[in-house]
Length: 308
Image (cartoon, rainbow, N blue to C red):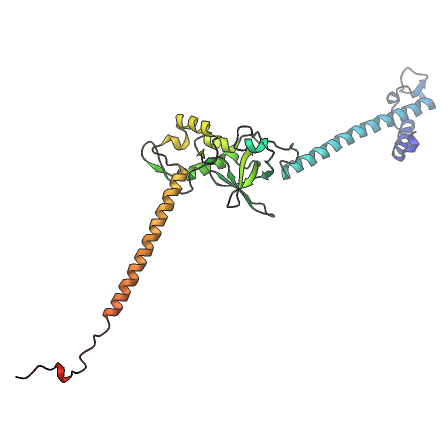
């Protein structure tokens, strides 16, 4: 059967020649017998053809098996290298489809109705403590508004227990960045808001952490009870433990902060309009005052005083 494979046939012939011409007698395992001496030194060798052929055949098979083993190792190495390359380029390529637990989330009701039909996966950019942005190099950019939570606004300031002001909005954003790092994040949702943002519950695929819940639990966001009461317990626990925004004094809920800023903005806008109107009236008055007043144009006799 060696001759069905040209490589094995050539190997067999080579080992056969080597057995007959080059190798020492002790290597042939009985392929050569010696006459006239107890050892091969000084003796006349006599070749036994069947033994030589058997030796060449066995050696060929042994070498072929060794080559097969080496080739198997090389194939495994190549496959392993290929898998490593795929994982390096796309870390999520070998992972099973991620499915987050929505049982206790704001999407629980939608899940029961089968309305959770939006799924977005990738490595997002953190916009602030309750907003993520998926910005692929190609394709549509998508913003995710974390459903059921509300984080301090980006420019919102809070007061520490010592009375020192600090940027709690920036702190919330930083916490979110440290939480997800560069991990792939999956967001599940059933709808968008009026601004086109996806209202989602998001999970860190690497750690399995539900991000919405974690932000409230650590006091870096609050339960947005106007839309969902799913995280009320987490907020109460964070408040009791004085975590995050609850570690300071007189924390202003984000929606109250926005309302105040909006009202302040309205007042400021009205004040600006009043100032502009006053400036306009003043300018018009100054312009009118700078004009010369008209003198008398001559009178009639009727206007003259009566002579006595």
